[in-house]
Length: 572
Ligand code: DHE
Image (cartoon, rainbow, N blue to C red):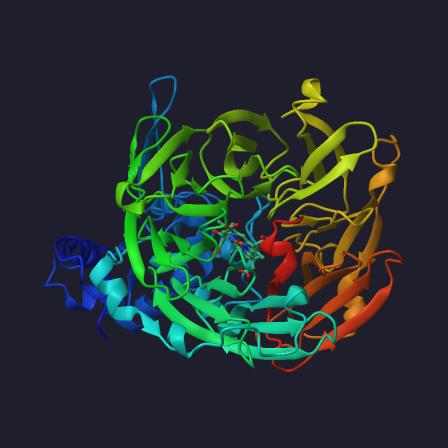
């Protein structure tokens, strides 16, 4: 059996860096020239186990820990790291120091810091191998420039072969684009009839869906960097173009300013760290901009990943958030040949976020800094940085008028069992703007998403990453009018039980609230195992009672859901 050793991998990385198109998929070390014999303590894997672990690392770990393993939402996982502290001393660490046994334990059981347990997802053998894999140097994936992108571009239905008006009878306003995480698909579901309109092959583990300004096109981005364009006007809405934007991605947005409707799309990639501007109706790549740069502390970072992107409705501008550097880029797309970027220094580890109700201010979680950054898109500068409870994770957050504090934006937290409300009205409530005005306790930590709707009086919040089954299966719902009362308590509803699914080994996590177009129904996904039957649970927002359960064998690991109208107009 061939054994891959740490020293061999080191050589392979050298080779990969030398030739940027060295295949990301080939067993890197298997190609490496002969290396000195491994010492007894050196972590080793067979080429097969190395490749399998590389795939698992990409699918399960890279999102939090980074392709180069320098850490962000998750800890640094380099074999050896060394960090200068403020007092001038040096701290050394790394996976080699933690060792095989401890790493296996962490991967299997998770940590209190928010890492989930993998003992119900990975086999013992896989856990053992991945623990070894992360003690070996990280293989560097290739770059992905214009030639690669163009070669991957597929214009499946050219613009002149598409309908010139909507030719189906579907209420487009109320379609939900639902991520089927582990099958590499999205389901388009008719929000009125609750019927599946179409299941479309897309990239692996589609992260989000975003709408074009007109509401005609849905753009979805896979974790594997595949961008797909869906035309809702077709008899059966289908994918009309795809392109591989990179190897690893999470965000896509469109041009929404008057005169630029449906003209451009922009995709942010985790690897390579860059954003690409595309023709809105074909996905033809037009411009690629690298995000590699210095951090806000003035240190070079080789992997500053593009996190959330939003489009301003008031300017031809995207707000592009760069995770590791803590820089927010306001990108003016009115002249992409002479692209103007305003670079705002904020806080490191920018992740997800949304507009306030006026859509002038963008609030984004710097999750590992335990802060929320506020950007004034009108003035093009930082409006504030708000300290919060650990690891804020808003999705797009929730906007409502608080009974005592006026307009607020709310986030829940991965690392705390509270909802944080931040004042967002610097004109009429100046003393409360960009300050935490209230925190309320919910049913547990491990929350990912909070949601309300202008037509609703409810504030819903999930906790899918909580280690307790009952908490992960449940959501809290607060009456907004009761907030401000010292004893404001939520109703806790076990959504998974309402789905009435057969018992399996996996936890049935209730995840991601999304309203329908009218704001009178709220939809939750049941996120269970890949081979488990799953469902979407529809709750009547007014009565908070079960209204419908969407079950279908094709609904495999549903997670994010994006209602056309709410996503098109940034309603949350
Ligand atoms: Fe997400 C939004 C990144 C794990 C479901 N997620 C986002 C955004 C980013 C991000 C940068 C904001 C995009 C935007 O608005 O432009 N997510 C990451 C990760 O790096 C992370 C932590 C690890 C990973 O490997 O991907 C991660 N995310 C998850 C999940 O495990 C979730 C729960 C299930 C899944 O489908 O993968 C998940 N993320 C979502 C959803 C949104 C999202 C549903 C959009 C929320 C919204 O309402 O807009």
